[in-house]
Image 1: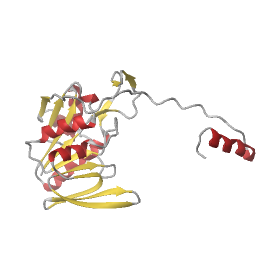
Image 2: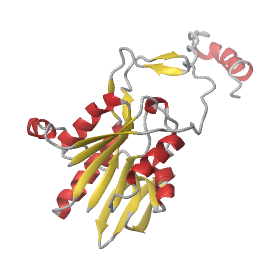
Image 3: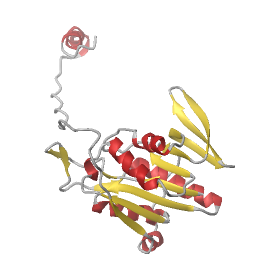
Length: 249
C-alpha cells in the first residue's frame, strides 16, 4: 500500500496576523502543520501499520521553511518527504497549488492520496478534489470513517442530518475531516529517526496564478455593545433596534 499524504505549513489559528500589501506578513507569526492535514497523516500511518507493509510519503508545496513541518510528519512516522519549493508558494491559490501537486504525483506509484479537507489559512476545500480531477482518480471528501481492503475503500462522510457511505476503487483520493482519528504525537525516538529519513527538495515554477487577489483586509472591528435597559421595559427598544438597525426582523 503506497500512500501519499499532502500537508501544508499554515499560521497557527491563535496567531495575531498582520496584512501587508494584500498578503499575510509572516514576521512574528508561529507556523504549524495544518490541523486537518494531521488527520490525513495519522490515517496514512494507521493504514500502513494495519497492512504491515507499504510506504507513506508526505508532499508539501511551500517555501524553504516548510521543511520544518515535513520533518514533523517524518517524526510522526512517514517514510519520506518531498518539498516542492517556491518562494511564491505561501500565496498560491488552490488551483495553482493543485496543478503543482498533481504534476509532482504523476509518475509516482500510489494507491491512496490523503488530504486534509481544507487548510485553515484559506478555507477553500478545493485542493484535494482538484488534484484528483487532474490525475483522473475518484475523490471522496470530508471523510470521518475509512476502511481499505481488497482494492477498494469504503468511506463515511457526514451530510446534513445523516451519514453517507461511499465505495470507490483504488487508486483514489480522500479528504479527511475531524473525527476520522486522533493524530499521534511525534515521539523522541521518532524525532531522532526523522533526521535520517529522506527529504527531497524540488524547485518548482508555479507559472501564472489562476486567481488574482485584488484586496485582502482584516475584518472590521466589532462595535461596542450597548445596554438598552432592564427587564420587560427594554423589550420594545430591543425589538426596534433589531428591526431598524440590525435588520434581522
